[in-house]
Length: 160
Image (tube, rainbow, N blue to C red; front, side, top):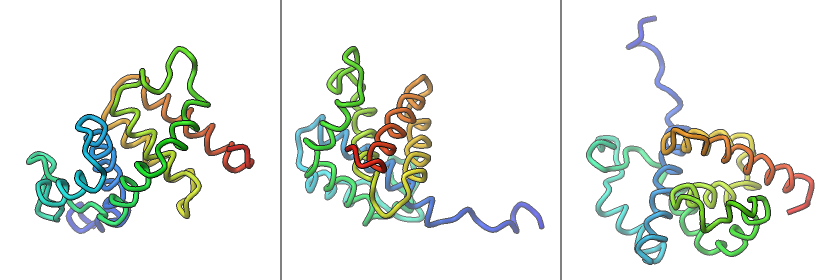
């Protein structure tokens, strides 16, 4: 089998990963602009074309799972106080939530929202580690891993 004959990577997984990247971007935009989740979602759908012919290079979002994207953005904004409390509980006093990079804050909020859903936590953690590596080249992915692992263990132990 040649490289061109090889089956494509799992398109469902890719579309869900892209949806998570877009959700982090949308949550960042909500925080920075003060716009509602509904407004930002609408802007993403209208202006950031979600289609198989779109390209990240053009500022668009190719093949995103639109349903997952909307669930994350709306869910995080509706449950943000609870999510922020969970995050604040595991962050050190030297790095409280407001001190974190706003993209990192958006990423962690999205991931915490998804922990405990029908998708296994290990998949959620791996997905958001991939997203973190896409946004950051420093120690942030390690921090994401530690925070999400701690919150996952607490949720599974019933301590969240």
